Length: 152
Image (cartoon, rainbow, N blue to C red):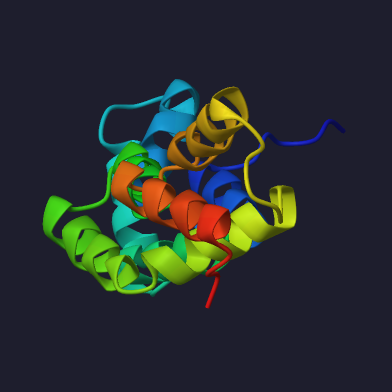
């Protein structure tokens, strides 16, 4: 007697057990397993109705896992890639803007912790912060403060 292949709902639950997924992510990951049209949408509707798929939880999960190391623009990219509603993404990112300077300063401190020694080092430190999604103005301020010895 062979094993039955898992149902779409079973596959979705397995993915959800690993981490929060948006409906769009599940749709993308499970589309190739759908045998009859509408089957996947029905399974996802059931899971969403029972609270297994919750887009707000996905947003909170991403922010909890990533905000300490990434700037608001990178977090926005990750949320958008998950197919979350634009309004919810914008609201979550606006909430991060208030702590952008402190978060960027901590990321910079862990990586460098010292003022740049020359223009090339200054540029390297700035690129590091910008590549992590922090605003260029925030990067300039942190690196400039370090150069003046004012990291309060």
